[in-house]
Structures are given as structure tokens and as C-alpha cells.
Length: 558
Image: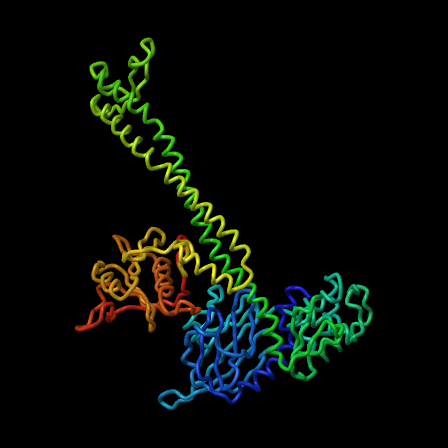
């Protein structure tokens, strides 16, 4: 079946999904819209509608409930009634039409567009085609609030109802077999679609297109499959061990009964397939964040060990430093000023000599004092460094054990337990995967292309951050939600647009809208902030500013 089939959502399956969603949504009001990571939940009377842009796993179906921890979003849809669910074209783009009354009594209409493709988005479009919200925000296509919505570029595949036999054959002959050919040539098709068409046409899927004689029967079978009304329900395609591998919204009559299972709803089938894959994907990404944190700490400890070894090698020269200092003290009259080195008679070997390196910029007495200082420091270091080395070796061993334990984690519960233990040892802090837990009340600090960005940790720090900032510094705050004050230190030059945008992303990240796809962030200079009389710490009024729409995130070097 393969990855392409799993991600398919072929046209017959989408038609079944449209019927199922229409029965559940049309005529009903959206009570609330919720965001959980890259998932959007529309809460109606019964099962909430789930729309996702999870990387590599776009999906839409009726979920059982809204997960705890979800944040309320997209208020434009609250109270809106669903009027229609449709497929505007024979493509993997689903549209839901909503309408509501504005506070003034005017009718307002919205389109919710779900692009069910690996790099698609979930977009709320208002009147005039303007984007109001975007779950992901595909910058390469300009999918950002305030811009006009532009649909994904058509794939250029053939619609069976419009295709001619000559064009179908010409497109297919470039592929090695009919299964691959139809999955690549027909609109909104995948391997399952091709298998269904060829089974209806009684054509061996392994047949080479150049050897097929009756193309008419293939085209008629495709038209029948695409035209046949959905029957409802869902089907699971099972692997060798009975695990769900794929889903369909129509009967997979070409697959043996032992390798398929029927479910009452297509949403149930989609949930089983995607749920398994998403859980495994999220577990691996969660482990990846912890792994990066531990490896970063391990790299730091190994660098520390190298530095300790270097310092130890220097400290073991304590006898040499002392001897050269004493030789200089006994022979100051022999040392010319400005010399880079001098050769003096050895104390122990009457016939021997010792070469003493000097700093030409220092006097003979100052060079002597420098060697005695080195001797004292080396002696002190020899008392401390071995213990530090032993402690660092233990930390390295401990981090290596944690990394081995991480590789053995098999479930989200085990990962959460491991995170708690790491947190207890100061090795992990949620949201700051590359650093151990920090103490103190200093501002969070970031650097963006050489520009300093400061972030308050609480209301009092937010207040202090603004009070200590220069009037020309730039101030950022996520619009309409609780969050940290962020200040970009201006300096003598004006920061470029990309630096302002990166600082806005930091402000969005340090706010309650962190899990949203695109967040509006207020940007202004500190001189345009005013603190009302009697305001609580951190409360300000913006007298002049602008809004940047950004994805929450931290700089790559954070």
C-alpha cells in the first residue's frame, strides 16, 4: 500500500467523507473552535470536527472529543452555522461554508478550506476571499491573514469524465504498469483507486500500459467508480499482523476479507489509521527534543572535560614556574630589559643552563612576579581540577545513561516519566530543550543576527524591562493574549525587517498563543508606550504601533 496510499484521501473516499461530515455539521452551530498544536477542533452539538496540518499527516474526521489543554481560537466561527460541506473540484481540497449574524445584524459568510495534502493548510476565508485565519500559514504561497487566498496549484491530472482514450493512453505509457500509471494519472487518485478501477475493468494491475488493448473498459470503470454514490461507513485495510495500514470510504472488493475490516463510520477508520501513525510520530518527535537537549548537555560537558585536561597540563608545570621565578630573582642583574628570553645557570646542575621565556613588554621584576603568580595559581589548580574532572566524568556518564534510557522509551507515558526525572535533576525544562533549568530573575536573552532581544519572565520583570529600555528600543507583545514583554535593543542603526519579524516570533512564542499557527504581534517603539495611572505591573497602553503576523518560534541559536 505504501506511504502514498496512506496519505491518499482518494476521490471516492472524499465523497464518502463529505456525506458523513454533512450529516454531522450542516445546519448546526459551532459552539467553539479550539487549537491543539497543529490541530483545529470545531465543537458542534455532537462529535467535534478535527482538521489537522500535522507535518506529513493532514487529516479531517469527526473526533471523539477535544483534548485537554486545547486553546480557544478563531472566534469568527463561534456561533456560525454550517451551511454546506463540499468538494469544489475533484481534488484533495474540502470546503465548509458557514454563516452568522454580525453584532449589527448583517449576514457574514465564511469558507473553511482544508487542503488534505502533505504541505497543505487549513484556512478561514472571509468575504472578498481575504484570509482571516490560517492554521499553519504557508509562507511560500502567501497563506497569511489579510492576504487573498490562492488555492494550491492544480496537479494537472485527468478527470475520468473529461478524459479521452487517446490522452489517457498517452499519459499512462510512461509508467511500468497499470497500477502505477492510474495512481499517477487520474485526478485525486492513489494506489487504492487504481486497484479498484482495474478490478472493475478486470485488468491485471501488473499489465504494462503499452500492452493494454482495451482502454475503453478502463476509462468506463474509472467513470463508474468516481460517479457511484457513496454508501457510507469506512473500511480498514489490514497488514499481515492485522494492524490498520490504510482506510477507504468504499468497499475494497479486490482485497481478501481477512485483510479488511468494515467500520460504522469513515471517521472511525481514519482515526484508527492516523491515530497509530501520529502517536508514533509524536513520540519520536518528543524523544527527539529530549535527545537534542541531552546531546547538547553532553557536548558541553565534554568540552568542559577538554578544558580541564588542558588546565591540568598547564598546572602540572608548577615546579617549572617556581624554578624560573627563583632563577629570575637570583639573576635580575643578568636580565636585559625588553628581552624575549634569557638563559640562566641552573640551580641543580652547575654545568647546566635553563632557558627562561620573557614578556618583552614587562620589566625583569615583573617577569619574575609573573612566574611566581603562575606557580601559585598552578598549585591552587592542582588542588581543585582533579575533583572537577572526576565530577565532570560522572556527569558525562550520567548523561550517556539517560541517552540509553531514552532509546528504550516505547510510549508517551514512559517519555513523560523520563522528562519528570530529568526535570528533577535539572536537565530538562519544557520549551527550552537545549538548556537545563535556569535560576534567578534575569531577563531571557536571545540574539538575532547580532541584535539583542530581551524577554520578561513575569509581570514585574515585564514592567522593569520597559522601564529600563531606551525610548528608541522596539517593544513587542502578542496581540490580545497574555504573554511576555519583548524588547529589541536598537543601537545606532535601524533594525532590518527580518530582525523585527524574528523578535515578533519570540514574542508570539512566549505567549498563550504559542501553539497557534499564525499570531498577530504588536510592534512599536518604547517611546510610544504609556502606563496608565494605577495600572498593575506590566500593563501598558500602546499609543502608536503596527501589527506583524508571524509563526511562534525561537532563533536557531536559542
